[in-house]
Image 1 (spheres, rainbow, N blue to C red):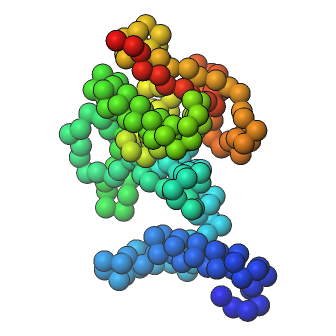
Image 2: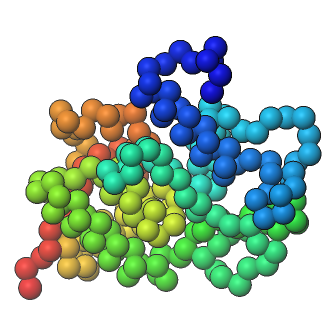
Image 3: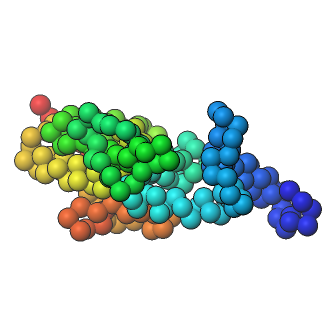
Length: 217
């Protein structure tokens, strides 16, 4: 970075430089396989600031999901929950024909069906909860943390997570699964940062904490 552009401490300058390089590497106009410009215009490569703005926009279209609060990742974790395809034989994807890439492939949103995905979702939910419980040794875990990790593992969007969690919660009330689920809206003092994160809504109600307990046989 040019000296005249530097107005930060050494630590912040290093952090900004790393972010800038990462964004340019993954979102450059230069295709790393062909070494050619995919978008030959005068517009400069995407900046870190533009990248931060586009993340929530693409997440709103269920194309990607991202989180800044993964305890094992010191930074932003971003992953796709959609794919561009020329054709699709998997019923877990919904075609968005009005979004097409330069090669003519259409966007497909990963939207699995509950009956086909139920077992895997419940198993993953329990596994992730247990992992966080073992680390924190408290019964009520941040539902947003659980949501982010389940979405990452299953490559689903937050809307699908909320829908499937609601169905899982209803099954627990009817004792049709081997776990009882408790959902709360209270925020602990050490969880105020959660307010600035995307919430988890079930039937229009915001929840912030979840507890899972296996039922006695």
